[in-house]
Image 1 (cartoon, rainbow, N blue to C red):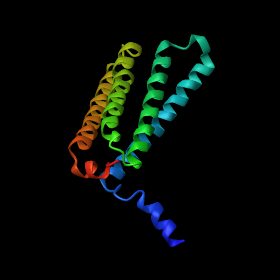
Image 2: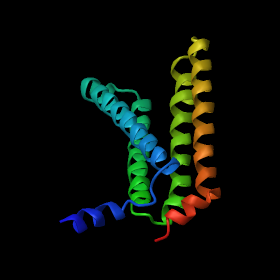
Image 3: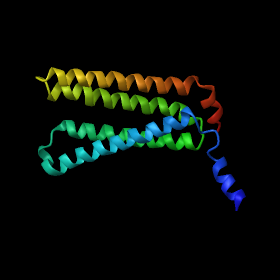
Length: 150
């Protein structure tokens, strides 16, 4: 019995420290995006065909990001090297979503509220900086390369 339990925990051996924190961050990000997607789907359900085209674009981008984040988490947990290249694609999708949602979306729909637009631009730059940081960590970290070996 104890050997079976040990084998289960050995599958996750090596996934600790910053890599574990990144997985938690990705899960929280995906949960926030699921909430945002549900809010957009609720708007579509209420307003139907009269819903603005921006809601549909945002929903598609959210769905893409959610899928890519969970796909990345799967590859990290299964310790596959493909996670290194997939994190780059996922973070580019997240940057695209942030640009659409926080910059373009606010410029299009909130043209008179400059404070709201400025706040969106700040959020975009913070999101982009975090995404670039994650991409660099996966590219440069020896620990990540030693953990993701399959």
